[in-house]
Length: 107
Image (cartoon, rainbow, N blue to C red; front, side):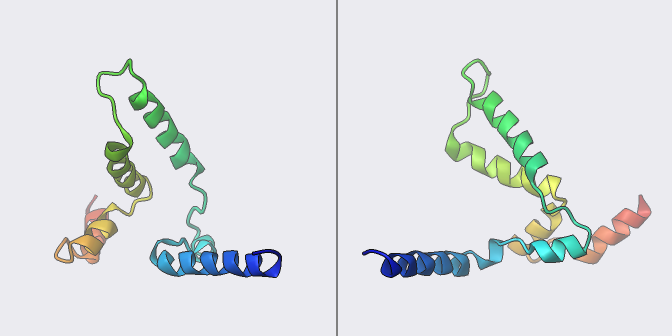
């Protein structure tokens, strides 16, 4: 496969990937319009520091890739302030979204 056929093949793979992961793609333009952050550099930096410490043999607890990912997922949702939304997505009976507003107003 050369030339145009190769390009067509890779473009097809890219489109298939984007379709499969559509729910996880970040809508950067919408985030920018809403004044939300679009960079995750600060999160990635924190994650890299945590992983580097935990993967180091000198630490009491040593992590492997299988145990690190769930921690990173939760930590990312905490830093992005989307943990409650993630729970609602997975557990529809979790506290309604309007309860978060009431809690914020009460504080």
